Amino acid sequence: MKICIFHPYEFNGEVGGTDIYVLQLIRFLQENGCICFLVCPGKSIGYKIIKSIKVYEVDLYPDNSFRSVEGLKKTNCENQLHLLLKQENPDIVHFHGFGKPYLSMLNLVKYLKIKTILTPHLASLTCMKSSLLDYRNNPCDGSVAQIKCSICLYKQKINSSFLSILAAHTENNISTMLRNLGIKNSGKFLLSYRVENQINLIKGINSFDRIFTLNNWYREVLIKNGIVENKILNLKTSYKKISNLFVEDTNEVQVLFAGRQNNPKGLPLLLMAIEKSRFNKNVHLNICGPIIKSDEQKINFLLHSINQKVSVSKYGNITHEELVSKVKRSQLVVLPSVDSEMCPLIVLEAQANCIPVLGADHTGISDLITEGKNGFLFRRNNIDDLRLKLERLINSNQLLEMNKTLNKSFVDEQSFLENHLIHYRKLIEER
Image 1 (tube, one colour):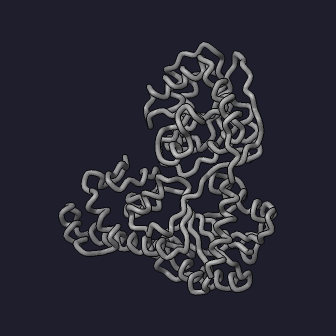
Image 2 (image 1 turned 90 degrees about the vertical axis):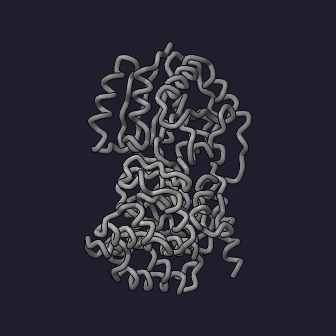
Image 3 (image 1 turned 30 degrees about the vertical axis):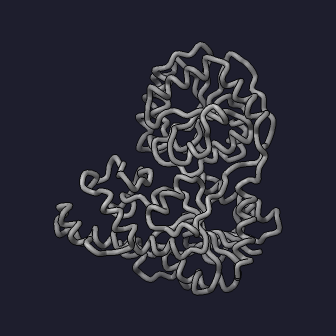
């Protein structure tokens, strides 16, 4: 079996969650006798070997024009992709991301009668702000019933009826709706143009043979956005148990934050909660992940404000192996994300090593954590609730008890990597 993995942006190895997910998947498939190669945006000719993976680059963006970004301008991408797919002849092309520039790529793959799978790694696929307003920052949680974007230009005007029109795949009444929203003529063309793009995007998603979702929350979001339900498969996301790690009862608690150091990932929220907390033990906070310049000044100020309460080590961007090593040395992993999470791998890493996780109670996080059973939850974007949970866990023996529970009750089920292989085979057999 030969699998083509399409990566939505330039692939350099290990940078973020999607990269690690794809890298682990390819390694697992190779270990189980599959041939894999990866396709990503870029301008290199031929292929290169990265982490023992054959990587092809295709030129999605020949210039910076608006039309090319929206996927309307023909590029060399189709010719490049056609040649390499004919040469490699894969059984399946698995897209780990989708957007306007990839519609022509999908059409080509379908024309060549190759089976297709989509795994969305970002909630922005169905985010109205992303689709319509040239999104650059924090995606909303994909809610159809209510727009929860904090910086959406039309947040007071766009409502569920707007989304219903998109979900119905129709352009009927769009002009009337835009008029009712009070959008001026100059903006009307741009917005209606992007509404049409969103409709085309939904149609494109529906043309995939399978859609793998990483949590039940986003499966429901896709269905409400008009995606055909029987094409969607919610993969059970879990790792096999890696080790029995019994946390020692010491007077210093190692707490780990792993992710981009910015507001969407909740690092400022965590630091403000720590600033308000009172601990009866020494706490050492380990921060791992790339520094985001836009939030760096705020985070440095908050770090200075807590330096009398906890000790802090900052590691910046580290390899996956280094991250796993830090997970194993922790007594608590905190995932305070403000914005949507699909399948935060740090939760899977911690659970596989029987380390308790404290996470925000939303989207893909609450799909992975059941309060008191395999971790702990606090109310999303709530500093006081996060503070109370931190104090309760660190000042008591609850972390030790949860660690013992995880060691005893961990169910060693099929990992999500094994689930990929099972469903690849099923899809090929349908020919």
